[in-house]
Length: 325
Image (tube, rainbow, N blue to C red; front, side, top):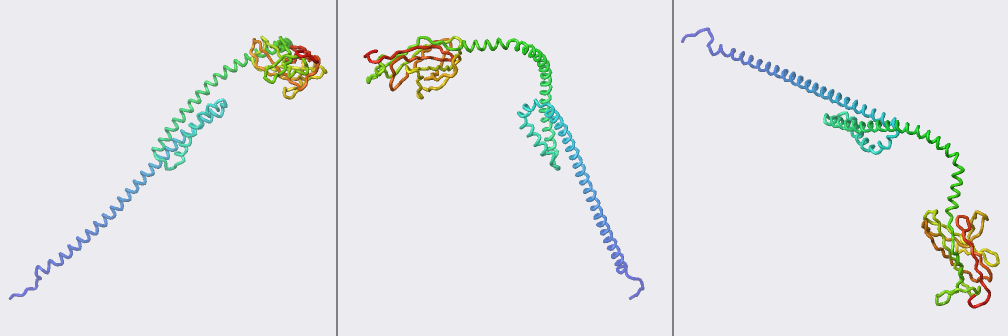
């Protein structure tokens, strides 16, 4: 058996393998480290891009909101200018106030939201356009009213001149007018005719009988006709004064007795007031029953007044004794 001092091939390859393994491990670790750094760099770049996009979006949003705000401010300025300088438009504005207020509230709500989306800002811009449309209508109304006011100013100048002429003429005709009014007043007084004073006895059967026996008389029925072609249709008051034979005016609360102002004799007591509905140009019969517990013997004087004037007068005599008067 022969011995040699050279190592065998098996022992020589073992260190080479160990070195190769180390190199591989180092390569893997280096690759992993590079990959990790690459990921971190990529992630950082991605985050920076996202931040930049977000900032751009915010800047865009801020720019859009500011733009919408400027449009809205301009609309409000136009609205304040119209309504503040034209008081005559307050009535018209009041009719549209609810619509304008609703638009302003919705626009303000969007603009106060710092995180308003592009869709919301677009909605606000659309509402501002609608608001501007209503403002344009108001501006047109202002233009129309301005033209009318100018025309009215010219008309007022002419009317002022005409008024001066009329006032001058009025001063010269005041006396004539007063006299005419007096004439119309007097002319509207009713005329009375066919005055009758009928003394009646009421029987238990309900029938009535004419009698001049004072003791038998239960009531005096006063009747007369009135008419006037000038007096307008409507209510009219007639006053009847009944003076008894003893010279005293008969007063009866149930007949509405009181005091009237006459044109010739001042204040006079009256026995009865009769209100009637008169139709212009017609003749109307008035009938007044006068009741007394006891009628006096002698002459009863009847006077009828309207508008302060005596329009009728008559007498009726009641006798003492006799069956039929």
